[in-house]
Length: 464
Ligand code: SF4
Image: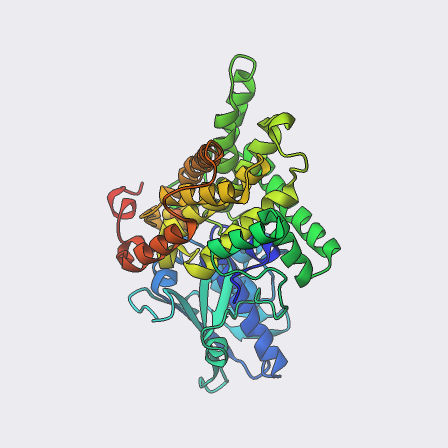
């Protein structure tokens, strides 16, 4: 059994503000539209209706879920869609009452076609949505339930019925991996037996899934998207969308840091600015990389920018590069996705920001020369100090506390990596133990604190 999820699936390029509430629903809607087309039933559809349950119903409006679904139904893909299209489609259905599915066939859709049911929580996952296709007589002739399980991954009821208990996400490889592992201790055992680093193990697994040239091209594309996102965020001021009318800060911080650099060390503030830049882009619905989710998208790019910009060559391992960084992060992220959750709606923010922090810490540790045991230690330290972190986005927007939370977690990741490097890899709490603790804590956490905006800051901060 293996929990390994390809880096090219775990890091996917999409649009903000949420992987589970924007990217996943867009993918689900696109799948539904394609299914109708594949069954030659597109023309039979006169109307489409969408039910948003649980967390999708509670915070979907703030997360842009209805617009994302319209874009998916229209045939757009999160990786390539122009970020302005979802909003334009929402305006279009409000004025015309119709949507062209896959750009081929017009059906009735109005803003009322999106039915929010936050009080109905489906047993499989809090992020559930059902799409119904109705014929000209108003009769439902096809329906499908989708679960957006975090990080943009989607599962259907049908897939679950076919393969109960299996990982049925699009990322699930049928390929036999050279180094399968389910738990951290198995990963460490492989490294010890084969004399490999964690990035070596991940690289070998990736190359079993697709040709090496595709792996490197995919990792390069991910890094380029991360870089473009940081650059855009550092150059854009103004106000973020939504009722909070929050000011964007990354550009102003960057300008100030450029001025201060001559007088003092500013690398840690830059680390925070990089994270804020990404999360402001995400909050504005811009193009981001799920890492492993959109809400936590700033941490890994921030730590990577910090490392490659500020860490001197003599402190890095000789072959430190972006591939190695992303591969270690994916190897660790797979443990969270496979054994706990990377979804805020399922595990609270510890599942999103905590997982990203842990992935970044482990990756930073390896490129600083850490052994597999030290890498595992760094990843463990980072999660240990995110345990219990709740998800309580104010007004259902991925802004407050999300943007600053990424900046703080990026700092924690760097601190965890450095702390682990001062040890020899031996430590009391294993990464497996802390992942299981996170899973249990998420399971026991009140639904108020799992992306429903019914508790925490979400109910104590007065919206302007
Ligand atoms: S609080 Fe954390 S989990 Fe919740 S939306 Fe914000 S970043 Fe995501």
